[in-house]
Amino acid sequence: MKRFWLLLLFCLATWEASAQGADAMAPVLDGSALELARRVFMPLAGLFLLCNFVLAAVRMVLNYLLKKQIVTAATSESIVERLLPRPQDEQNKVVKWVVLLLSTGTGLALCNRYLPWGLHSVIILLFSTAVGFLAYYLFLRRQTK
Image (cartoon, rainbow, N blue to C red; front, side, top):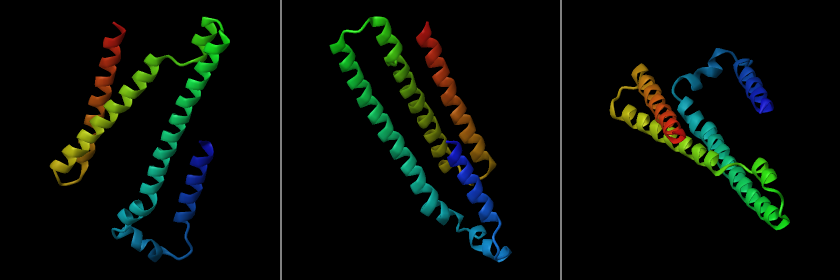
């Protein structure tokens, strides 16, 4: 992960240090930044999400195969508990992401409903995300009781 951030930092540094002068940045500043985001950053974000999904699926299959091998080998229960993740932890992880995505989506819908875009849109997104995290915290607190 450190390599990725360093590569991104170096790419951004070389983008600013262009030899063409100030006119080279004019197409980026006049509104084609959205075009740049659409052509470069959106596919990268999609690739990142796809890779995370594939890794999660592989991890789930490998956990299943490990459980199957442990059952056939008849190992002790204490070793099994230490090796395998608890289903409750996985459920909490799923609930966290669902709540976070729903609250952020609600914030984006509210931002789209109440135009113009500006500082209030950022406030709406922050507030909706905070409400999502509060709901997740209350869910965890209720679950421990």
